[in-house]
Image 1 (cartoon, rainbow, N blue to C red):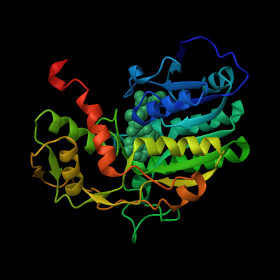
Image 2: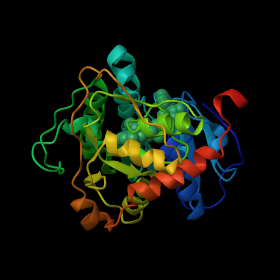
Image 3: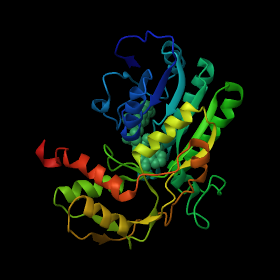
Image 4: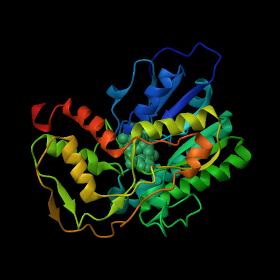
Amino acid sequence: MSSTDSSLSSSRRAVLVTGGAGFIGSHLADALVFRGEQVVVLDDLSTGDRARLSPAVRFVQGDIRDAALPELLKTERVGTIFHLAAQVDVRKSVSDPVGDASVNVLGTVNVAHAAARAGVAQIIFASSGGAIYGDPQGDRADESHPLCPCSPYGAAKLAGEKYLQALSIDGGFAVTLLRFANVYGPRQDGRGEAGVVGIWMRRLLDGDEAVIYGDGLQTRDFVYVADVVAANLAAHAGRVAGTINVGTGVETDLVDLYRKTAVACDSGRPAIHAAAKPGEQRRSVLDPTRAGAALGLTTWVALDQGLRSTAEWFRLQPTAGSS
Ligand SMILES: NC(=O)c1ccc[n+]([C@@H]2O[C@H](COP(=O)([O-])OP(=O)(O)OC[C@H]3O[C@@H](n4cnc5c(N)ncnc54)[C@H](O)[C@@H]3O)[C@@H](O)[C@H]2O)c1
């Protein structure tokens, strides 16, 4: 692990964001800096980009599986870990389940074990509602919904949750399991669970065709990245422990998502339909009731508004052919 930046001077404890150079983690790091926190980011830059980070962040390039993690936590005086570092590509987890489990299971175990040895007070974990509930039985999946991960990625997220809870018993840290829906917003790429938004926006803004696989009636719960950041901040500020869905409760099918994305991009181009991807989940939508009660999150950025903000960001990015 190689760290850069000067050492921390204040006696306040720092916060660590693993995966902080990624899509969601970099927004979270920005918000924590804005709140005056001393922010350390640990990221191996496998998919992250250091250019996303504010100069106020202390950046450590390294792997969450590193045996030296307890020393880093002690040296940096970390009190809270936001654990977001992960292999996030569901298809990659199918083609390489061992590699996926190495990062997403063993990496999470290492973070929890190191936290216990370094006296960390709280770990806030980026879990996935969509990937661990499977198709909702009934209307919306609340936190007591049966757990039926249907990909190695989902199985690894669930294992991560269980390890964090088990290791917290003797480890003395509080655990907050935030089960995100499909997160979209500025800085996203095509890899994450809501990657379709980023892929479509890039293509539509470049004047290219965008593809819907299958009939497009498969549904997801699209949550704007600022709402996910707000959930993390509230869990930290209130030291809220437990399992909490972070989704809007609004179920949107891909045909409707495409229509809204095209409007946000000022594009009249119709979608191309291609054969359905085998094994794709049909429905996904989370019940956000507990997030309201536990974290005070009762309003969520509307999809049209979030897509407009996301499109504004994509418009400012260089196109594939221009760099
Ligand atoms: N994007 C979504 O829709 C979504 C939904 C549910 C849950 N999540 C979870 O939220 C978290 C962040 O996802 P994201 O969409 O920002 O993805 P991302 O790929 O942009 O961010 C992941 C970050 O982790 C880093 N990383 C990967 N392996 C690492 C390792 N071994 N050591 C250190 N750093 C490593 C990457 O470089 C990257 O910066 C992940 O845990 C993901 O599973 C995301």
